[in-house]
Length: 291
Image 1 (cartoon, helix red, strand yellow):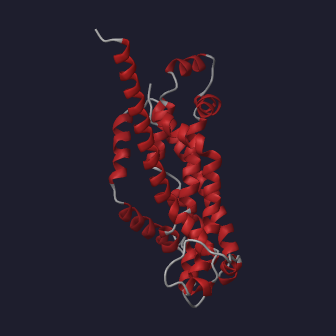
Image 2: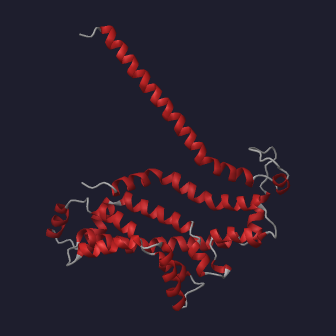
Image 3: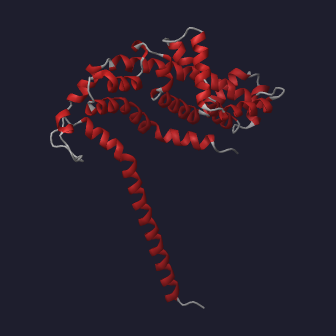
């Protein structure tokens, strides 16, 4: 039999190992946080350096003693960045709103309605995720061009109003709602539309909020499609504005002003994520758990 001394020694060893594991975990997390956050720090730091100070640094400095906000003013005067912000807000709001209507109805149909070939249709629908994005972009470009919708908001918006992944995520969440609740509502005379609006959407609010936020981020960062389908600056988005600053905004490579523009564009998304981070995590976990 083990004596009390042996049990005390084993308990101390267990506590020591636990503390060592916790210390190693903290060190790794801090290291990873530095790796992830350093580009953002460097972006903000560069945006606060003057053009002359930045170009005079033969060895990059990790701080500045004379920060300036002139780069932010230059970013808005070099190109009509304010107009691009308005265009991006219009594009983001309309695209997200239309997509939420489409994916909610599609997810409800696949999750709750019964029709012939539903499972086969859903498998074929999921197979669309295997198609490379390059092929989709080419097809959309030809379609929008043939419909004479280049340099228009409908041409920007329509190719982005659905998502196979978001339909799948919301369908999985809808299927977590008990069938007995649906049958009880039908007995009470509740139609499918009212059941969707009054029961399923409120119960799936975390997932819907998550999808909405992710779509907003996706629209805000959209670059390839707007760049491809528009050559009129009246329809440029903020991502295109940054590229325009790089190409012809200053007539020279003004990196600090470019970084200032990137900071301005990034801040709304960072604030959005910080405000809704708990709902995003909750929605993703609920969408990926069934039962």
